[in-house]
Length: 141
Image (tube, rainbow, N blue to C red; front, side, top):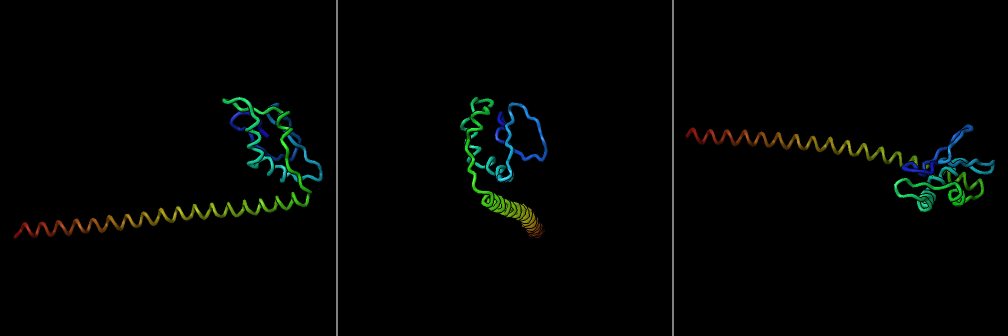
């Protein structure tokens, strides 16, 4: 997890050994701890608020390793961790589908607006043409 600056709180799961500098803190999960659960916990509003609350520095916030290590992460039994991960993944899929539906609805609304405007201006144009003809006919008399 990044522990400094504008990227503070960003987290990733890696599938290989990595080296990090002092602004990156890591967690190595044991066999009875779900990597996906820890990621969800680290990126949760609770943990993110804790990081920002314990960070020092206003222009460039930073949280030292000692403070970061002392932020508790709720750790239920592995089966419960897996259930939570499954539920979060399910909700994320629903959110993705809803976002796609919203985008599609916006596109559809934009298309409808264009059709309505086109019809309105075409009608307005016909009305102007009719007014011109009436005006010209009245002038001819």
